[in-house]
Length: 460
View 1 (cartoon, rainbow, N blue to C red):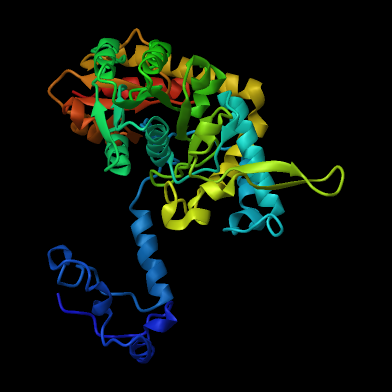
View 2 (view 1 turned 60 degrees about the vertical axis):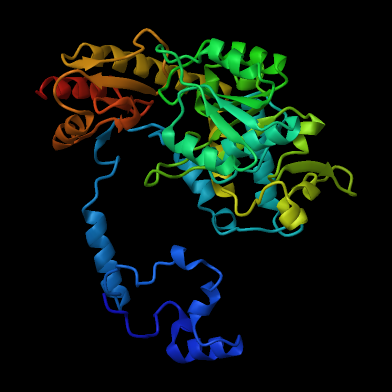
């Protein structure tokens, strides 16, 4: 591929060749390549990227993007049973109305004297999440639930001074990969596969804890498979007896019907707020939360921003701002516990609106609906010839595994479902070619589930 001749990009003024030459001369170099001299040659590409020719006009760019988008199919026009971490929940119109207000949508940073509304909105979000989680301290959201899990585990390592982390639940491979990368080199993750019934192997956990070097036992509630593990309280007891912390990743939408992690011994709860009023967005729309009790040793290890409420010099008036700002990398820079930059604050504001709108009764109602739909879907699919539902007698929330016992793989079944206007389950290659993870939420109806079952019956 030949290099693209120099030109002025219509949206990047400094790309004009004359301007580029002047900028390079000002910093004392002849080429942009000089800026990358410290990167070893073995890591350099040494050729132009294999990209199509640039589109020179806005009209051409718009047409090109519209053609690309027209070839896609969204979960709005296709019946979808995809979940596995990014869920199709209903987002009330008032949530979009609030987060699209300019003072929230365009706000990036700021201090209490210039950003009162956003800081108060984040404080309200933290307060609502704390009530939901039976916790006392909740952070301003980080990028996603994966990062929140990695941060929670690093916090546990700093508190205990230990190195090893035990992953004891069925965990998404992508999450396990990111967390493992995020916590190294200070910590290493030991994965203890769950038992055949999907629950944590308490005997294996006990044996690993005997070494005395475990910083945290890390469990999921529910597990990646959607399983609700009845042994979660036992894990807390084992962890604490061995001097380790108990970290639980949870789906916050379950907490209207399931006990919050703090109630069964979790020292740190973490997770993703995507189910709380955040749209699915090309697999994204994520923001991560951390929650603990107001224990000085734990709060001191939060690397993320915390907003608090304090009285002002005017009686009856209050202000909202950072709590213990000196903990953060904003204050400590390279000495910070972790680097904290742009957070997913807008999603936090949306989640706060969602929680305020739902209230305790609404959260209970939606949780009961999801549990009922999940149980119905498991029962209906188990009736389909060639379909097996592992852990059929266990309680699942939203996600549940399905195994195809015939000759067709999960990929082939999904392809056949797509021909009927249905997105099938998320593939689980680590479990073999015949297993997938299906998902139902409050947005599905019994008619939707019946349609899936009937369609599967017609796939040979």
